[in-house]
Image 1: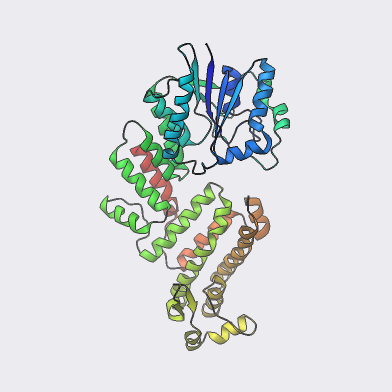
Image 2: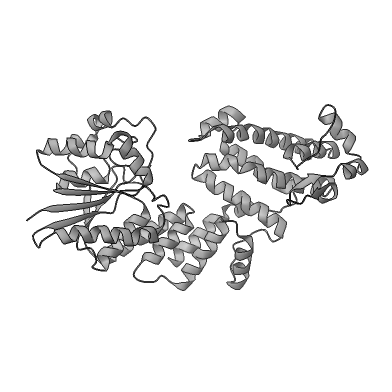
Length: 438
């Protein structure tokens, strides 16, 4: 009788953000709505945090002590839920959980649903269920304390007790909760999530969110979104076909070989823009090998295919006889202080040939710097499991990640790939077109 129930997917800023020392949506809604029964829905990553230090229940305990109120906390554990961006993975499960809660309620009870914590897929699931009348609850949205997107980061040494003491909301009485009043607003919120996913180059998540809307978005938007996802996945054939079929102008580079290298570099640039430094450094080597191969052809007139063969595992290797025929075997022996053993193609091998065959000193400086950077950042990727930062990259290589990207871009003219400055904004151009259609 007159009980308040609260269903809450737990998210990255719960219970208290280390970045701004404000409580996340889970705690903030409980502070201002004081539900009697709290259902915490935990994916694998969140569940790991819960088992580590009980941070979510600990903060709820402290809050309810402060409010002098009783509560019941239910933990909904989903240890196998790793693909947290997959709408289909949540829809039926959350529907069933909410159904069980509603069965316990009578006409005097209230159900509150948090759409500010958890992943976009979780949030959209809740909104769709409410919109379809399958979850008779109030949707609660919580504004971020800094009025912009939160950083969802918990460090390994998360100190829940200290963070509770430092929690700004223990002394700041501002209520950041808002109730979503109508379906139209829910759809607008869903479109906002789609927009955020597009701007973060997460086209697969944007597609899942769009599919979850009760009203189908335009066919042209959905088709372009599919193309964008194929492009980010480096599915060149699908994008090229769609580019012709839909009369789009998404691909600045026309030649197949040059386009593949350029699109890979754009993908690398996207990772950099969103500070995915570990992925950035791990992805550098394939790009450098391809660029060096094209530089060897364009600047030195030597095609790598003339010096190599493909083994039965479809791996390219140096052909020692052909190197001898081209007069390069002795040079490589000398470069490697004795005997060049051949083997698989490495950027360092191609570098030696470029330096030997080209007289362009500016090119020499550029490719030597790029190769040195590759060797150093590869060590970062090999030894860092959790985190790679721009400061680490600068300390180890002498260049920031932006400066490294600039050097990679400087290689393109030497590789014979004609790219205009505005072409490097190609993803922004595509995103702008997507948002116009949205």
